Image 1 (cartoon, rainbow, N blue to C red):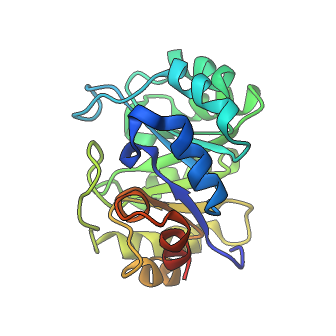
Image 2: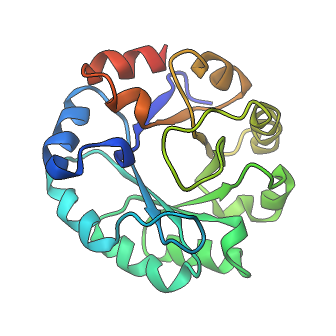
Length: 215
């Protein structure tokens, strides 16, 4: 695990009317990644953005785009998101019949591959694809909407995945309800990348918010 936890503000909580300005602001405030939540209204009960918006955002920051595809089917869209400027592309283990193939596709496009697990999905579901992932994302809320409360049941899953990762070069990311208050527990469980939406964007001083979550 890296020494300093990384913070990935979720643009789902940003002001979409001034998205370029928001991206520059969180960049200057010291974020590590830009977390981009892509939802299709099918796999999750919400619709957000597509590749065109990712492409439009790309010139506003050099920080890595951590693109979380909450869509099903996912394979037909991976290449478009890669071409739009994604750096990490994460797919859900629940959203594909052939997730190994999806991860191979992401890597073949020169991108880092991530895999995500919903709250009810056991850690062991990623055991046989760990040789093809650069990042594992634990959903600590049921995906679809921002502003939900952290599910403490996921702390045990984070610990389990950290043990499974061992000395592999895989980042362990947690997304959902992360705040400055619960971040220490999430980090102690083994996370090294924290996604935060409301906790970064809802109260003015982005740099202070990011620093508080980082601890």
